[in-house]
Length: 600
Image (cartoon, rainbow, N blue to C red; front, top):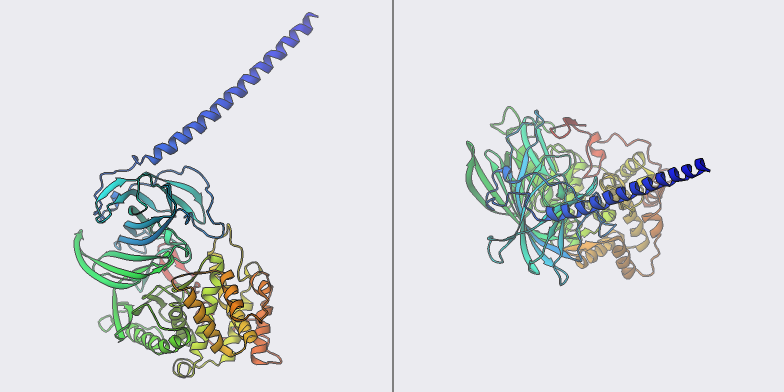
């Protein structure tokens, strides 16, 4: 009996100790959560940054301190179809004023990363009655102070509390700014520092001549300045880029100013200002810094090119194709744009962007449609050269004026543009002057490229990209060539040939000018225009395929061929550089500090 009583006593004692241990652990958990909440409030206070920094000092990156630590590991995206933290039901940014300084003092061979630092002033509009918070997208950039500015001046009215939230490998982090006490419409200024990276800021050299360019498509603007990084958030832009001699900057929009500023060390510095009056998505904001010269073929068409890339730089000669100099190549590209312009305006309507300028660079892709300053890869030849010029020019209507709403709608930008580009370069005057590839050979070549590079998992025109990196879709052949063959399928069903499709495209561009279009919008307008035409939307847009079978069916019907199977490998009619769509990576070599060697 004594033994039994003692055993029960010991058992109750152990149970009591266990209960006390559980209570202690629960208390620790509660205290941890409480401290986390308090720490988040402390970070919102903004006192972890130097608030005495003068607003107009953008020539010294030390004024942008280190980024604070994360608060929450994950925060939900407001729209699962969009790759942005911005909540457009709360705030819209309608205008950006970007002021940056670019440090070109590092060498590519040292693998050092040049800095791009300064500030961005955002004009916002609050959509609801109560001020809450404004979220901007960032990705691996350092954020400094955030200020509310005066209504009619750049005077500081208030230092706003802010914090960084989230840590996502695709979309980055949200810069959350607490907007308590701010007006319904106003301006805030955010200081930041970014470095050359594998995304937007690209630093390379061309025959020992350094250059830097910004390429933000599809969601890489957040890697060099905080913004609402979504095609849905179109805004006007003023951008000032300060560089040291002998470099100059060219960029999107109209150049409206060139001013000498205080020197950095022994180097003279110049600020170049560009204004974009039409609203554009942030991925179209870009600039190039290099040693540049230009050649004009008309008062409104000009081509910039890198100077001094050859030993005979006094005559500005470099072997690009044969004995063509960079200047001669620039002039040829300008002539192509001049000859294509009336053809494309006849197809799609008036050109509304003012000047049409280009810059030729030794880049890893064929081209990019930066408004008023298209990037073109130097060294293209044959039909690929004129196709690239046509493609980037046509993006002025399809892509820049009318923009795909989500990354999954990219086939509208690229497929429609490819369709119009091919029709433009097959025009008799262009084909006779700039290339000699027949229509059947060109489409057969596109089919061969599609078949030899097909990936079933990326074969849908309108895929579900929720939680996926959109760059994988952008760098596939699907939004370019499959979408182009889909347009040929619609042309067949509608009847009337390319001229009827161009009429339909003009309707789209007019209806969605300076805004965005989704796949559902495209289908709706098509069915309104052609109510009796039946289209297999689900098959083309949503169903995966294995070998490009549907494209092959379209090709065979186009040319009424009995045995028109495309070859298993692309025909050797051009260099291998011509086997990629205009935005894709070329199998070429460019020195870069980003990956520690050559891009191959």
